[in-house]
Image (cartoon, rainbow, N blue to C red; front, side, top):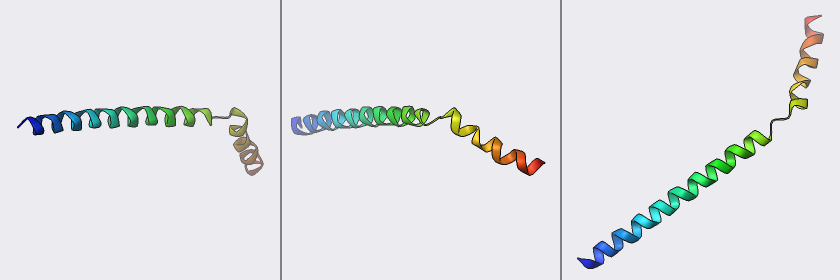
Length: 54
């Protein structure tokens, strides 16, 4: 029975470590996405819209 308790402790540690790693990875991906926001590129859409309105 001690073997199973030891195995469960190891599996719990692995699951917690995996969850923490996925959380950090997701946070980094979110921050990289916000870094892609370039206000200069957003203004290009207005230049394409204005000639169509006139």
